[in-house]
Image (cartoon, rainbow, N blue to C red):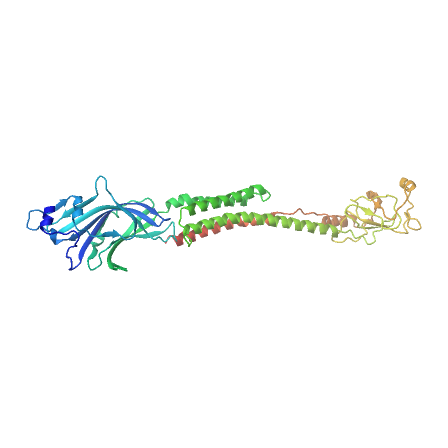
Length: 470
């Protein structure tokens, strides 16, 4: 072969048809594998068998009985070869095990087939707005490095039929969709215009991995945060611990998902879902804070109201004169009754559970618990200046004071026979009824949350998957 080339004056540094029409180089390829698709670096690794066809009249051997000559790949060093390179490649290499993986075939009309095996890492710009339910359009571009369109023009050998192996290619996270062989493209550089061809193919991502690794755990965490709606609001440690645990776990899940993604400036679909789940767990914790706040505030409000009610509970006996003693009773405090005159009643006490006389006109807020007792100056129990004439051991040993607490048994206070049971019972039923602070007004927040949170979450999931699946 070397002697043949020398006799014909073959110069491997000059292209075929030098100084005349350009050389038309036809390409075809077979995809062996797509090994790695990286969203972080936005590239993919592909191994191909690239075949280039061109015609060189200096190599024709028509008129012989030979049809095709298969030559050693090492003879490629003695032939002119197109300077084809992959323009969107980051790094590439030729396989050399066990020998250089390349072939040369000669046809009688001077057509040369040059095939090589290449592994390249090619860039692929990815739009991750719908990640992980996205589809990416990647390409593989071939171009002449030094020959302009005046010297070399690239074509696909048979259009889309020039590409083999993509239909049967199996990937872990992707399904190869359609592909298209672009022909007749040009690339304008500073040094001139160069011919270019491109193979583009669609990769549809399979979301099952992310469903089991991200979506289902996120959904379960959100549902777990709803358990607190059925826990007693008074169980503060249980509800707070559950809420904080779900929030922190959701934060860890978000961090793990973001670590596998590039630092991009726009929001991805998985970010939307994780943020939505995080907000649901966060608002579940805030919901208990609202329940606890409302419950505490309403309990305090009711306590203040009860204190006001106690102060207003009066057994206003305007002229509650006993038939025997002429004693007027008025409410003084919640525990004692006392004399409201300058002279004492010599420690005669009226029980705090005594009843007002029936001659008293009871107010709606009347209370029979406590009274202020006024001693009528004309009462038989008082002296000329209101001093008590009642005899008791305390009168002999203890001096009288102007104001003393009076606590006596029920028989010190008498009442008339008219309507006493009815009015007293009415007074007690109105004034002595005490209400404990109710939690149901705060628990109603939990009741609404039990249905509102799941319904809202389900509706947002329907909207989310409907929007990002198409």
